[in-house]
Length: 327
Image (cartoon, rainbow, N blue to C red; front, side, top):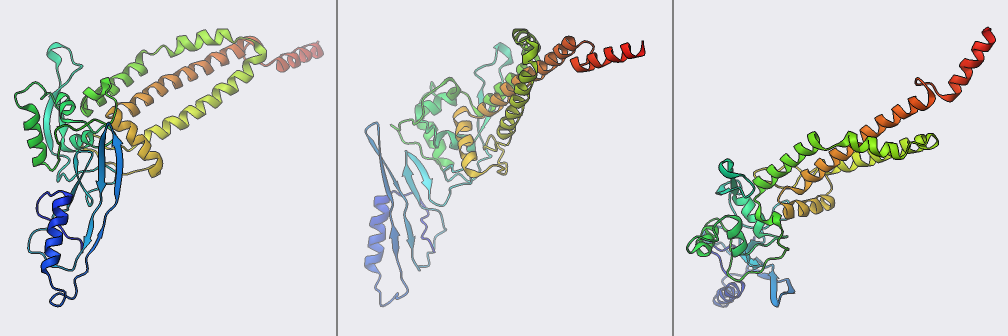
């Protein structure tokens, strides 16, 4: 079975210890020993820094007296276990991602209505992992620890206690936006408020009536109605797809619905926006769907006005013939 070490160790020290152990073991006394080391080195130059991902698997029939802990390796400045990859492709060796790491005051609140949002260990792990890969300075700013005395060192010590390594001098991977400063709780709160405003305040009816007046030609009404119905169907399909997103957020770890290829792309977008992106797109789609509904209502009224009391032109001609026949 795999060999485990009871404490963090880098790759060079691990190879040295392994070589010493093998050199002291005689094959005659331990004929069943079978060691196999597989190393995969992927070098990537990023801002002049060579990032090496080493995946080491050692199979050995030795019985070890110490407890089994996965061997960590370092990539992009984070402590990553080859056996601790979770179902979403995020990395880290934390034991309880649902544990509250700290509470952070909101950045978008006004005066006395300031809200505090709980930041879990899992969220910190997501911020340190791709696609963001925050460094100590940015993470300290997000968690409001940048201005405290020895804030960076204290933050790294706290992260080490929960199984995350944040070395000094690490470079971020993603571009910093305004959303970078938000924790997941506040980003979701912002998306919820945005959805409420889109649902209640967006002038869908006024926009629909205005555009209907721009396309009031009776010969085009039927074609335009078909276009609106087709657009409504496409919009619904896309909204349903976004609604099936099951990206990790806060304490939630929902079961996947979509195919892994599609879900991984949605998860990337969610990680960049910290849970704001998906709900915000759904809110915008809801406003657009309301516009489409109001446009269809406006077209129905125009149909009725053009044909007279809801009858088509053919029906009105038939009724005139019946009246003449009766006379």
